[in-house]
Amino acid sequence: MVSRPRRITSVPRFARIAAVFALLVLAPTACGGGGGHGSRGGAGLRDPYFPKAGNGGYDVTHYGLRLSYDPGPRRLTGTATITARATQDLSALNLDLKGLTVRKVTVEGEAARWKRAGQELTVRPSRALEEGETFAVTVHYSGAPKTLTDPDDSKEGWLRTADGAVALGEPAGSMTWFPGNHHPRDKAAYDITVTVPEGLRAVSNGELTAEHTERGRTTFAWHTAEPMASYLATVAIGAYEIHRSTTGGGLPVYTAVDPDQAEASRAVLARLPEVMDWAGTTFGPYPFSSVGAVVDRPDDAGYALETQTRPFFPGAPDLDTLVHELAHQWYGDSVTPRTWRDMWLNEGFATYAEWLWQEDHGGDTAQETFDALYAGDYFDTEEDDRALWAFPPARPASAAHLSDPPVYWRGAMVLHKIRQTVGDDLFHDILKGWAAAHRHGTASTGDFTAYVERQAPDEDFGRIWADWLYGEGRPKRP
Ligand code: TRP
Ligand code: ZN
Image (tube, rainbow, N blue to C red; front, side, top):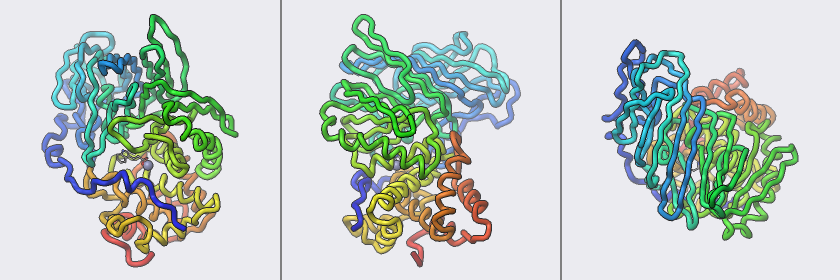
């Protein structure tokens, strides 16, 4: 029997054309690449789907975020210290920030001029920065953070819960709660410190390094040493039940669960260490220093997200969803897409991980799942079965379609075609080797196809790439 997919119900919005045209017209204001005195960093990294996301001219190494939040008035006060290296001479540089009020900006401790236009915060330091120079920008800000509506109509950003908030950032929501270089290409280390009213807890990525209460407010300090894309950063605030344990391999596990979800979550979260041990065997060494989960109920969002080390679930997850979000820690979080067009490298792999888990635990084989999908016999409706062939996984139709079925299931089918070609042993080596080759980095679809070809130089993958990865419509043969 073929298990029912889960994400299809959260994709009710195939239509809706993104405002890509408007984004393109507003694209970068960079004055060429080359540096020279007076040069400005670009406002946008020209992502094919989110051209304004991220900024040129510098590379962030560390974010130090000091946040304070009051759920009642929904008020966030923040100080972001962004340490970066200039990749060109910079008379001005841009950060992405949406909503909130900027109070003050300094560069290397000196007051800087700044202005805002849409999501672009342009900072002009009192003296120009030189190529190669490491510098710190500090932004003081406050306000009620926004919820964003994605091109696909789902909600992200700073989401309200019954007693707190959860920040979800894929693909663009992180700019609603801190200024930064918000494109997956620029990964950095993080220290996130959050102060909340006593009685609530603040959970974030990485490891909890300090916690103290003073005058009715509790501060939690979280540390992420490994590179993290900003869309994977999270803060969750609530009266959580906390559970700490370790996996068989000795990895610390920290879960935070909304009390209303605690009973329903207990059995599945108890299996998290087992899933991690299986994933370590299947995908290779885990790339981070801790793991865990957050379960809470935001008002607007009903999807899970692979927030780094601490995946988020909008209610007690089922086991497949847990496997999916934990697999993303290797594929997406450690090996991060170079642009949003490479999204299938996240979702195809995480979906294939579910198939492998099923196969290894007495469920359908990946071949059976593949066959059911190809036969149009997988989803609940014919319309959903057809949606699988709407566009090629490596060329999503627009930003509105990044989370559509072709990216997930047809992406997984590409991996299965590779497995059919190279056999099980080499396929498993490729899964591990790909995660190792780009560990803590970013990678594109072209990097992936080149990697596969290097691992199996005697095979011809031309038809798989042409028909399954880049080709329109349903390929002629399964
Ligand atoms: N990445 C999430 C998952 O685990 C789903 C998701 C949330 C998503 N927001 C998105 C996918 C934006 C694409 C674009 O499946
Ligand atoms: Zn996913």
